[in-house]
Length: 187
Image: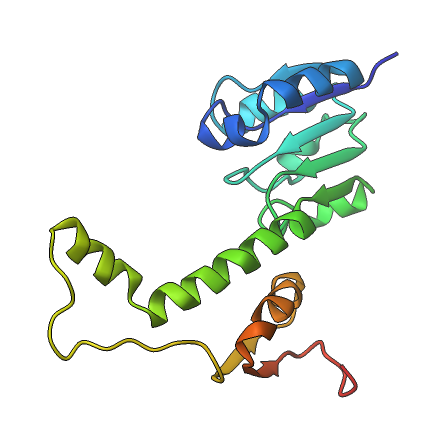
């Protein structure tokens, strides 16, 4: 018998991004799938997951606490399309020994890439230049920008994003300063 999969994400841009037709087809091969055609209304979620073995969540999902999980006796796995799960987990979820996985590792690399782009855009004032060029102008006299080469970069926290960011910064010969409560002196 196929597992029952409840896709709790409402039918919006985020769900369409993560659960496109290809993903829907793959989910249908794995299990019997139901989709949330409402919003993250707790009463809708309670009804959707009462017989589900697996549920798929996304950004904006409310905390999966005793109220929502009370009748979800078959639920074994929550797959969260976001990175961090802190906003949706509850002590009750852990007491029930329901496993939770997220896309954290996959998103961290993309976020690190974006972080580098933000560094460069900010230092080089790319939004400023873009606006001027769109108006058919060029930079104003005396306007200067800075680069990233040979600068100091401070990282607060050293999770997955920072770990992906480090090798991206190598070509810029930056000095890295890191603060994290979770790093050993050796790290």
